[in-house]
Structure formats: C-alpha cells, structure tokens
Amino acid sequence: MSETVATQDEPLSETDTSFLKEYGPIARDGLWSNNAVFAQMLGLCPLLAVSNTVINALGLGLATISVLILSNMSVSLIRNIVRPEIRLPVFVIIIASAVTAIELLIHAWFHELYLILGIFIPLIVTNCAIIARAETFASKNTLGKSFFDGLMMGLGFTMVLLLLGALREILGSGTLLANAHIMFGEGAQWLTIEVFSDYNGFLLAVLPPGAFMGLAVLLAIRNYIDKKHKEKKKQKNLTTQQTAEAKPEPAQ
Amino acid sequence: MNAILLRNMLISAILLAGFGGLGTGLVVATFEATKDQIEASEKANLLKNLNNILPADSYSNNLLDNELIVPDDSLLGNEGVTSVYQAWQGDKPVAVAFSIVAPDGYSGNIRLLIAIKASGKISGVRVISHKETPGLGDKIELAKDDWILGFNDKEQNNPDVKNWKVKKDGGVFDQFTGATITPRAVVRAVHRALDYFAYNQKKLFLDQAKYDQLYDNK
Image (cartoon, rainbow over all chains, first blue to last red; front, side):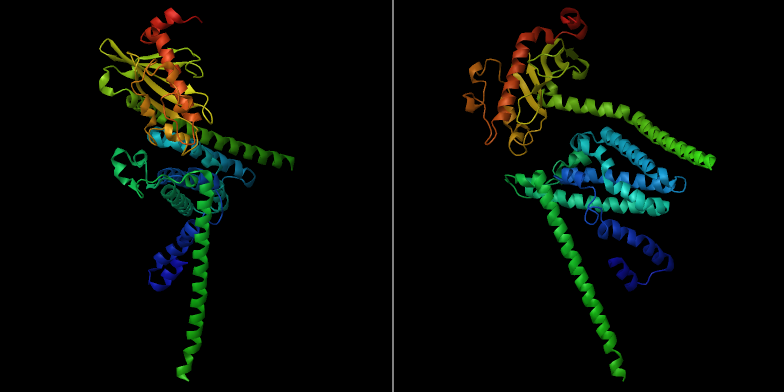
C-alpha cells in the first residue's frame, strides 16, 4: 500500500506516475502481498531444506531468482506462439532447461556451494512458484513486466529464505554468514559474525523441525504486521471522514 | 473438419518438438561451455582436500598425475576401484592418499580421505561426506570438532591393536557424548586402511603399467 500513498504525497511527472502505476503493484505483489512463501505458500520444500544458514539461503535464493527471470522472460516471449493445449509442457521444458543450465554454471564456478546445495538446485524445477508465475503472469504480460515480476517474486522468495536462514543460523549455531567465502571468495572470511561466542548450538533450529517453527514465527509476524496495517488504515479513513464532516461546520 | 483437426495437431506437435529441441540445445551449449571449468573445479577441490592431509611442501610431484587405480578390497570398503594418489619427493616415496568408506555409521556410509606416510604413520584423515546426526555424530568433521586430528601420527601397531578402539570399548580414542556408533565406525575404518597399507605397501608406490602387469589378474 505504501507506493500508492507515496504517489499521492509527492508530485510526480506523468511518465513516473504511469511507470509506478504499472510496476508498483508488481513489486508489492512479489515482495509482500502475494509473496511466493508468505501468501501463496509455494516452494516450501527447498525453503525449509536449505535455510539452515544465511549463505546457503542466499545461494538458493540467487539461483531461484535467475531461474524465475529466465523462465518468465522466455514464456513471455513465446506467449503468442504457443497454443493453449501445449502451453504447460512447453513451460516445463523451458523451466527444466533453465534450471539445468544454471546448475551447470554453479557447478563450474561455485563448486563448494554446489557441493552444499547439491540436490536442491535441480529441485528448483519442482518449485511450483515458478510455473505458477509462468502460467498466471508471464503468459499474459509483456517482456519487461514479466522480467520485473520474475525479479520481484524471486526477491520476495529470497527475502524469506534469508530471514529464515538468519533466524536458524543465529539460534542454531550462534553465527551469521558463516562460510561466506564459498560465495564471495577467500577474501570474505571477515563477513562471518559470531553473534554469541562460546555458543554450544541449539540443535532443534538446525534440524528440519526448526525450519517449520521458524517459518511459523515469520508467518505470525507477517500476519501481525498486516493486521496492524489494516487497523491503521481503517482509523485513518475514519479520521478523514470525520474531518471531512467537521470541515463544513465553521463555514455555516 | 478432420483435415483441420489433423492440421492443428500437427502444428502443436511440431511446436512442442521445436521447444524440446531449443531446450536441449540450451543445455548442450551450457554443458559444452562449462565442461572444462567443472573438471578444473573438481580437480582443484580434490587437490585442496588432499593438501589438507598431505602438507603441500612435503612432496614435489603433482598428486593428480601420480594416480594409481587399484581394484576393490574389503579393507577399503569402496564400491568399485579406488584411486591412490602417490606423493613423491624426487624419487623418494613420501606418502599415499586414498578414500575409504566406513559402512557401519549411524546412518549410512561415511566417506573418508586418508593419507599414510611411507613410514606407516597416518599423515591425516578427513571426512568427505556423511549423513550422521547434526550436533551429535557430525563432530567427526574438522569444522565442528578437532577429534579427527587424533589420528595423526598413529600407526597400525601404535597404539596396540587391542587399543585401536573408542574408549568405551577399551581403546584410546574418544567417543562423543551421545554418539558412540559414529566414532567407532570411523576408528575401525581407519584401522582397516592401515592394515590395507601394511599388506600392500610395496604395490602402492608402483606406476599403473607396472601394477597392472604384476597384479592384474582379470
């Protein structure tokens, strides 16, 4: 909702407003109101499995963003050629080849990350969020919009992955950004933060049940924020109504 | 009517085949482009693992060039052949490194990499992969605990064979609180590797042609 408020508050040139009007909702959908995890509850398998450290989460998040962008753009490009009856197999082929290509690239240039993410890169194929975006958005929208939608949906997914990864890593092993070097090279060792020194680790947070509980906590926080936001809006509407009613009085 | 239906089906089929071809083409192109880099990354990773247990300044050859393929042996526990990497200082044999498997871990195989000096002393042991319980059995990883360093400089008969066990079984090696099965499996596998080295010491420093000529009975 914040974008629409912003457009009302700040005077913007014609093109800016139309740009915001077209792309603002896409960003809001992807990042918050229609977030792949928070709202659609899609792609939970890789989310729960790989979110035990921030670096693993970041690796899978980046891979998912690239797959989403690639698949959304390809689907959008061919949306007028593909017939409805064969569209799903075609989408599957596109997504599968994009994932395989990205897996090979990670294997070649981020070998250690590949060893850790292992099976979860090919499993991106089964992330329903990707085919859902291809079907509901990219097959009906222009190339630019589809690219932006892929980026935003991917960022929204990565954001949740990172939050969950940070939560589980801090609770589970008392560090943040451990193994940063496998993502950013040997020079990145300093990025690792020891949140609690001499921490014995909280096993539950690292194991799969910790992932479910962490996700539940994040969902609860998300719902709480949404509720507060709605209440505030209601109140704001009420006060504006009251002031609107109150205004004419002094004139009388 | 039928002709139209047939035409539509044909167009769909051709389209689908076309996209299949395109997708395959993309994968083939990426595979070709990354093939060499993947091989190089894998070699670099293997060499890094080997250098963790075999100090790079203790030998002068290229480990990956002096690879000896040996047939499977129950003492090694590997499925199929095993690669033995020989370390040489000039023409003096320094050590060999090879992978072994501990099949009796708590959950599945534990793959280890071990380096044994020509004198019979262990140069180092590292875990390559395992599925042990995080927080309990995974202390066999050097990243979690330095337990695995306890094997350094041990020999087949030092400690005595009857003490080549975890403390709970009357040996000298620590077990972990709440996890005895994992360290027990690793200790046994390492000792089997020392046995293998003792029985095959002469063969392991031969080059492949000579080894095949002398011992290949296939």
